[in-house]
Amino acid sequence: MSGTASRKFSQLDVFTDTPLRGNPLAVVHDADGLSDTQMAAFARWTNLSETTFLLKPTEPGADYRVRIFTPTLELPFAGHPTLGSCHAWLAAGGQPGQAGEVVQQCTKGLVRIRRDGTRLAFAAPPCERREVAPALLAAVLDAIGLAADELVASQWLDNGPQWLALQLRSAERLLALRPDNAKLKSLAWVGLVAPQPAGADTQFEVRAFIAPDGIEEDPVTGSLNASLAGWLMERGEAPAQYVAAQGSAMGRAGRIHVHQDGDSLWIGGDVADCIEGQIRL
Image 1: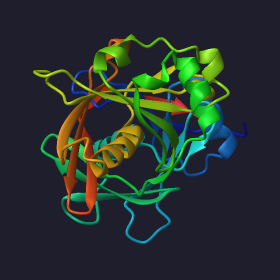
Image 2: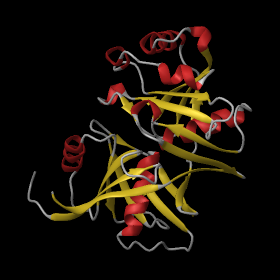
Image 3: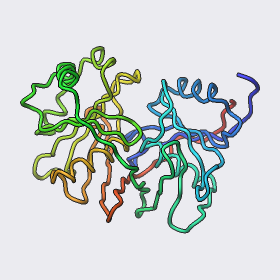
């Protein structure tokens, strides 16, 4: 790396109001001037599912620009980095151009974010869908340890990240899964959803296996929940408003608040502050 400078740094926990119970996110403020190599290297160093970099916007109407890195690649969009980055930008004194709504620029385009009580919620970007090749589906089921008759439906979902989505019959079975990550590593990011039993405080349980990125399971995943919500609602499998749980199998307590409002699907969650300081990059 060529010279270093001190920059504001935040580490947050997203989709929870209690630190250490959601999905952590590292945020580097005032990142203009950092190279792609520096950003990628820092994201590898944090080894979190995502690290983001806040920059000046280049698109009309955007309040800020964000770049989103996993330890191995850059994503055009991701959910928990969107809510966490917006929270960090506002906490650092960011002032949106229009009251009540923040507009984030990312590689996927402009993403609207609004306050939903104490939470933030983003308008999910469009999701492309396609069928899953039978051979790949069979390999994924084998890696996860599922029989074909345990599956309700499968679909490729792509709203920036690409997810091979699987709908199961019960949250109990979903939580019991122990995938073979060595097998999954060469296959796909896999997102799973199943209904909760009657009386539960959430309607769905979600898990995200991301072995191809070197991380076995993502604690709470906004992009996946956005894709799953549209897929479930379109098929009559979910109401227009619900709360999903994610991270239970990892000892987390993520809560994703989903609300269909006209043509917009809003994905909301709390953000908890954990670390504030300076980094040298």
